[in-house]
Length: 115
View 1 (cartoon, rainbow, N blue to C red):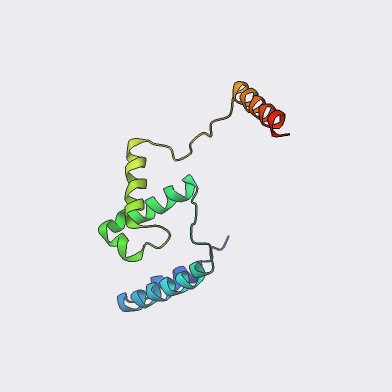
View 2: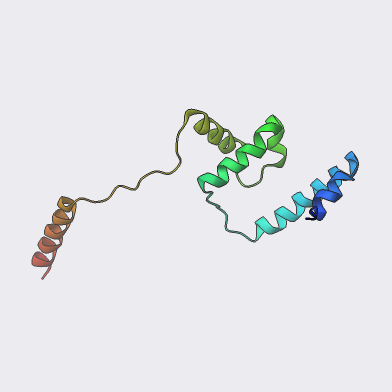
């Protein structure tokens, strides 16, 4: 079975350091062009944050030079939350039957005295 390398991997493997810097600069500009077409806020899923942390942590403080999807401070908060075992998925509180009953009584009162 033949294994074919991805063309980008072949390009990177054969590139010099200055060429790699040029590739990264191009990708940053291309990424910015695409990002300008998106809404101002991008919500990330927990799996996406974990992947960004996995590849971003080795960069250390240099992450601030390349990070674009969020702020460096938010990236640090994600790392802290991961270390502390905090899940970003918060359960939405559901209303109890009592809350609905109270709402119904208020609506009844409103409609009774409105006319």
